Length: 175
Image (cartoon, rainbow, N blue to C red; front, side, top):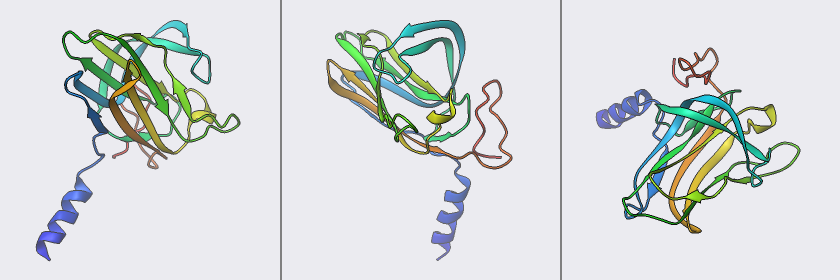
């Protein structure tokens, strides 16, 4: 009984969980996932596989919190950074899956393919209210069409009175 109470107390104090991630270590040597901050470069790139048809380019990404919990709030940015193993080549692409968007019903967005070298970074930012959809979100990294890494997230309503992450605008999930 004491052990059960102790475990329950530890679980209550644990805070947000790290994003559920998996990857093929022969291809990807590391995968970081969670809430990010990045500088907007002001540049856009066409991305026909996305709902908007473009992506905003960013610089200097910083992982602010490794978590699977994503607060539904305008400006929240979340996603992955994968590091490719030395000598890996081919075409990399990230697919983002999410609950249906209001209006369009879209559930899948494909980022532009690019050469697999160094690292792959893919983020999603809640820019519009119709994007703020609660539920399971996933980022899948493909290499030549084969899944080599995946991170799962859960988008949730932010806690009342939550404070923003410093410099990001994404509400904290903990007080």
